[in-house]
Length: 142
Image (cartoon, rainbow, N blue to C red; front, side, top):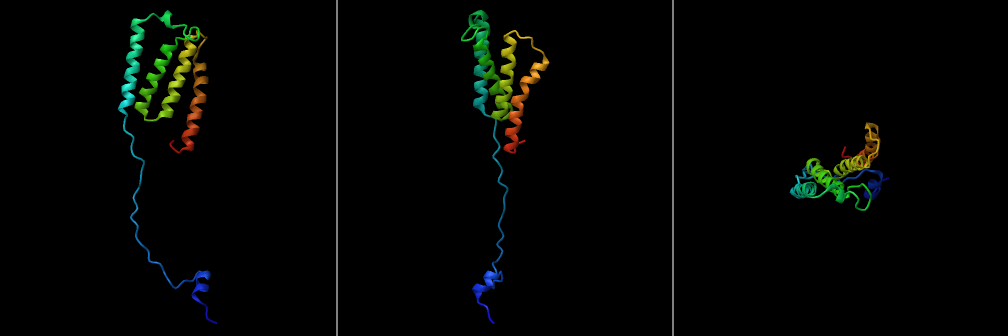
């Protein structure tokens, strides 16, 4: 009994053999992110504005804005300055934000005159770092 070409194809036996075509494979990598000059310029702007506040204003004038004993302009300028410097250095926004936020928390509690020891620093630094590690593992960047 003779089988047709269609039956041969359904059985996995085809008379028509496809020719192997050599395909040139190139590794396509992520483009390397250069240091952003804008980040450095913004860091310098925040640094000089922080210097201006430190030299030309009294700390008591700025201590009680919005929240008592918060020194909010100083704390925000320090946060933005460290964020942009770390973003420029590490080239990763999420890592820079986590480290700058940790510094912000430590500085804020220090300004509130809490009994602050190194155990509190560790306790406050662990949750943002765990969040950062989980996000980096999800994106397979670690």
